[in-house]
Length: 173
Ligand SMILES: CC(C)(COP(=O)(O)OP(=O)(O)OC[C@H]1O[C@@H](n2cnc3c(N)ncnc32)[C@H](O)[C@@H]1OP(=O)(O)O)[C@@H](O)C(=O)NCCC(=O)NCCS
Image 1 (spheres, rainbow, N blue to C red):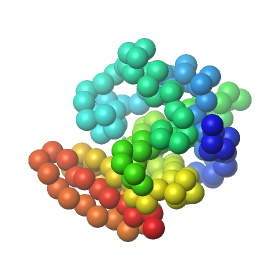
Image 2 (cartoon, rainbow, N blue to C red):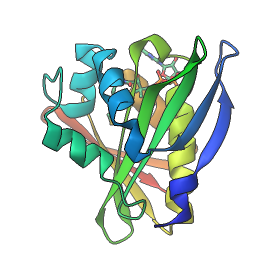
Image 3 (cartoon, rainbow, N blue to C red):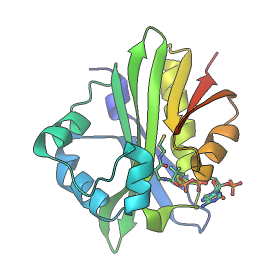
């Protein structure tokens, strides 16, 4: 397994709280399910393009089954009263040589604190380090926060609008 599996960095949120951005681990299963339970229907819709309140065992297996080469996942962990809690995550899946699709979700109570921007920065650094050239994403057209994260991330951004979806490309090289 690649050393991305040991990835860890500390970030400070806008309100001064500190979070760890680290590689997803197999033992995160329960925490991941708990994080979905704390995320609004609108946020889950924007992430999955479907009304989703929970995931089957099979779907959860897919989210946990990362190889850190073709499927890389980072989670954001906050300290909540002495207990670590997953409050966001971002992942990429390689879909073509040199190209991966990215997606993010941040628990609503932690949105607008810079978590999304930090995840973008770390995932882009990991992807570039792995030799990828381009990230792509599919965004619901009214998803202003996600578009803002992409526009501010410092990468070259291209957009193409289709019915019901904006296709985004981000240049890593
Ligand atoms: C998109 C998402 C990941 C961004 O995460 P976040 O932690 O809120 O992002 P940040 O705090 O880094 O904020 C990003 C920017 O969006 C802005 N923003 C946040 N919410 C906004 C809103 N409702 N309307 C307009 N701008 C908004 C922020 O102000 C910030 O801009 P700034 O740096 O100029 O202040 C988060 O909103 C989310 O999980 N959304 C639901 C899932 C989703 O849309 N996934 C995308 C699938 S590709």
